[in-house]
Image (tube, rainbow, N blue to C red; front, side):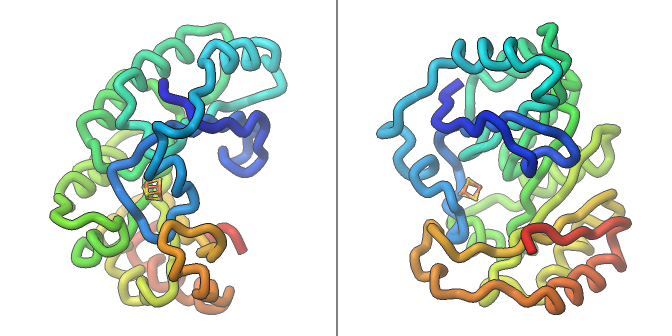
Length: 234
Ligand code: SF4
């Protein structure tokens, strides 16, 4: 895979597990609130990590590292994603695997789920359908592809979360309610606090995050449609 970044040990990227985090280069979205601008806009200028170095590291950390997180960028753009995941599954590492995705390639997600190649999927829901282009930074976007990924996860048997970064000024409480209605019946929905540092759109660096009270109010609204709503990053 085109690996452009690596956090060897993380306590926060895989719920309840110590994980290593692999960042793939390139993305099909240009979210204004993205914190991985280099990965998204100029991955070809970043050095590629030798994959074998990762495998050696994992081999030496059996029993210590519990999970592998594949994030990006957008991992489903990687032509070798499935073969990488199969190798993880077939290895003796016995590590859990989490995939982070924006859900814009439902066919790839379906293949991953069909083969049960991951233990956990975290899928971003950027906005309600009518605002998706704005929050994903892409004109002419086919929201139906996001909807297909939502259905794949919600109607499937795997463990997953949907998550939204609440960007003040771009998303309001009503939008969060609309998203929750869109994903109605989902097991878990996470509202993530916005961090104004190093955003793809520099204009967002002047935006203050929501207060805890306001996020809690949004969570209560979302609970009308989703079983468990959690806050993250406060
Ligand atoms: S935040 Fe948006 S632009 Fe950044 S990696 Fe995720 S989907 Fe791509």
